[in-house]
Image 1 (cartoon, rainbow over the protein chains, first blue to last red):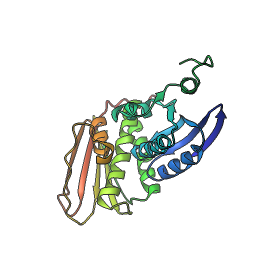
Image 2: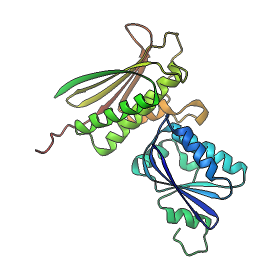
Image 3: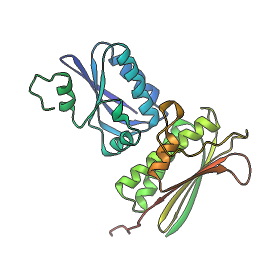
Image 4: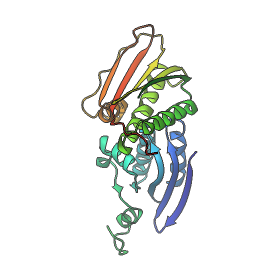
Length: 117
Length: 140
């Protein structure tokens, strides 16, 4: 079961996902994120994700492709250590920005608001 | 302490999730570190997904998963029963592109020993994954 909490902060949409992502619901993750990526840059807060596999990564890459095609960005924030390990194994950081906190991700889009980088 | 447990299921998302969580709990039960437990869970999830995709072309098919613990090594063998003879991919030593499939690379990287071969006693393929664990008895 996946749960999505969405906040709009200036020109960004912050989505906090809670649950586990595997083959059974990766398409749902992709669909839900695409619905929320219509207008703004997207920050995906991963702090509530207990598990994510490569099917979930493929969903994130599909959302990233959509965002890039529409001149927007998706960045990841707050991955747990196991998620960070997977991202490092597949060099995801080479293709997608990954921040240790939501504040740092927000500061990436709003560099003049005094938020920490 | 030594044991072997085999369970059989169809590759539905629910069954694969249940198997993954069961093996996660087994890894915790033999005293694997948190990092190793998560590595084992990731490898198992990818192995089941690989079998579902490559053996059964994203339809539900039968898997036997055997988990064995013999003192210092946790071994997980995932066996499919796909009847068609198919070519086996080599275990990649470097990170493949996303379109080439990264599952076997991830499995090979997080586990200590991985072999992929045809089943000896019939149709199908066996992916065998080993993780060294240093068992510590539970504190009473």
